[in-house]
Length: 218
Image (spheres, rainbow, N blue to C red):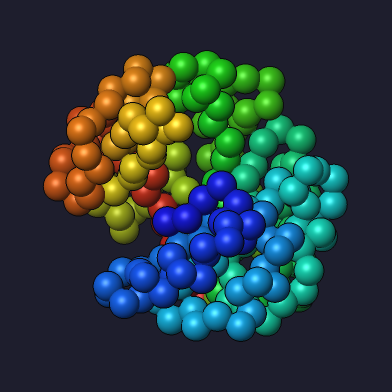
């Protein structure tokens, strides 16, 4: 996964090529403002996710992302000030982009609170998050083929068995090169020597907070 703003990195094409040559998949997380740099690249094995905080009224609105034919997943990060633009953003993603999926998640300010479960004035309480997601599912009338819903530890479906053992797939490297293998480890600075994916079983919660539910149109 390439985060920060990878489209500004001069070696991005070389990074993608390196992954392709070594049989590795690449996911690019971007604000979407500079996607033109990807137009001429071989994007085999590459997923592009564009994170937005609203349709119009935020520092990262979907309306500022230039129209493109690149296959995108739009990631809508819910917070208190953008709930009302959720439906408008889904409609914009459907009409203006080659949208492969619409991913709804939420802001959790672990850096400020040092606790994943504690809210700030900007974040949405997890029980309200679940209600917002349910309202979207019940009332969305668009035609996007896939809706991704971050469980955030609170979304449950009848068809998903969350009792199964989860294996850690998250990794974060800080500027001081300390490595964290779970978002819940960030507040306690529980570092690990190396990022080893799909091997360590979940030690924090009976279902991983990073799991998602995918609703796919048949």
